[in-house]
Image 1: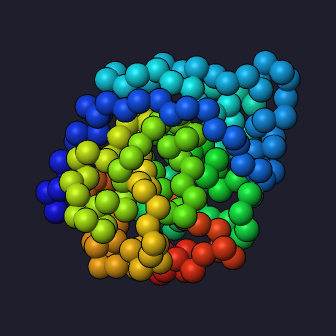
Image 2: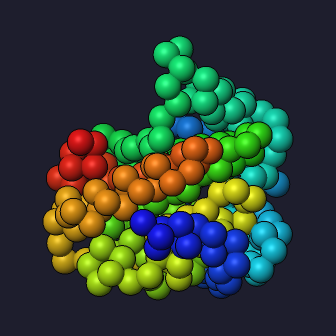
Image 3: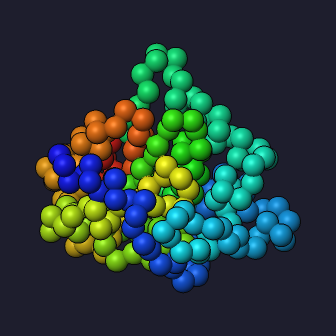
Length: 226
């Protein structure tokens, strides 16, 4: 129980280097709305990171990090309101973000939703990149990582070295780590169940966002949804 707590507490002190530029994947409707405006909006936005984290280039389509208005940014704030104030009064501890097929923009949705939740009052968010076959969250935030979820599930490595600040206050990231040979088995393991359970129950103000593989491309998404 204590390992995850210590890891989350250490996240703001973790130093991470920016990643080199990468080609952007094809994206869905939300991302097209973000990336389609003027040439100025198509430039890479260089954003000052949180204290202890070097400056780096964020993906231009992280709309909530680069603009305070507009229909796309507002749509994520509306989604945040619906999550934090549901009709039944039961705020979810974790959310699974996925898509039907590759290239529909699930990771961009996960990242923007994480930013929106983190910008809320008294709300923290932790993104967990569970797309072990094709991780993308660290690239969106301009981060270069070598270790992550895979190392914890497979080798029992300390999460304190892997949960890192995203550059948005109160938003942390557990990257996927190196590609494994058995992603479905790792995500269906008892270690994964214990990890999610502890993350959900450790803090009342923290919402966990699980960025999973597309439903039609990988069997492990069904495992995560259970």
